[in-house]
Image 1 (cartoon, rainbow over the protein chains, first blue to last red):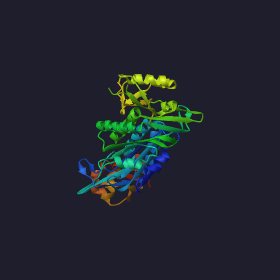
Image 2: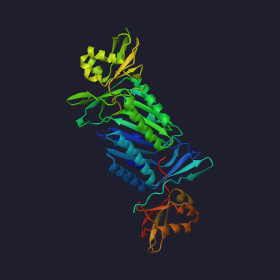
Image 3: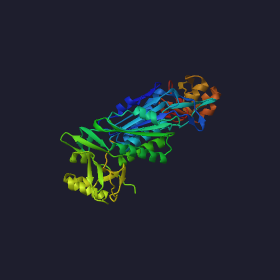
Image 4: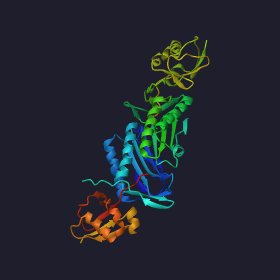
Length: 141
Length: 141
Length: 83
Length: 83
């Protein structure tokens, strides 16, 4: 299950989608909006995305991670639009027969999502706002 | 939030309980009942616990992990009784400002739960059953 | 003679058929001796005794722990919680 | 002259005030030249150009990529998804 959506993210169908009867472990990551960044108080975040490419890159991350770890399932959901403090922007779920692979693969998938999926966030403060510059994506030669 | 219960585990109140406005990441682990172990097909599992001590040890694991990582919250739920394939036996949720600590602390908390919390599982197969012998808990001197 | 309240779980519970029992032990007896005594009274549990750890008042203790009257001892086979 | 369909996101979208635009580029022009051209037409985006990566048909490409007529180019400032 992969999606970019403006609606609140629901982990339940994602976990159901990645779990198989062979799964002994599911690792689920929530990226949530926190009230502070680099010492500045954040009012809310605004996410933008190149939706079609973001979906494609999410699937590529999943394929990469599945090729590296013995997984039974993986899924990624990203929310865009305006998100308030405490709301979930990203869900990454990974299932595997044993817990070690689930944790490692989930962590790696989240890292890769942040490095390659074209999504942007703008922090809005009381006295201004700024698009956050995170990773410059790598060009595969 | 810490509990031993015979009811199905619900991750939502657990995640709500561990998240703070300072949290940027929540790592949630599901231990789920899988259909196979050591090459044998499993019909269902039966969990037993020394409930009062299990709760105490779950809290100790949380204190340990909180002392080691900069977390904003942690919680552990364990289900006991009969569990079918695909049902969740264990939930461990950890929140922190950044994802790396959330993943590492959650993984470590799950490992420690399995090493110290007095819970036992019996595998039931088509032709018999067996209590699984996992970890011999360490005695602190 | 200290009377010890003993809790049984998992395989021990199945084999002995009881969740709890009370054993009278000699003065100065240790957890290790309690374990041996259980094996004498319930020979069927003998195979489980070598990997048994005990907990007193919800804390794991060494076999050298000396029992006191009324103490609450849980017999803890190797644990296997989680998934 | 190849006509290039250009997509703008995040800060670029805010500064240019448009989500998409079409630029006519000389034959044989590269992604790098498209980027320079954008800076000429919209000087306000100059500070963003040095860290800009481009994607053609939903794949990141190097500045040496030669544009073809009708190509779909997305201008990708440093990404910051997740949390």
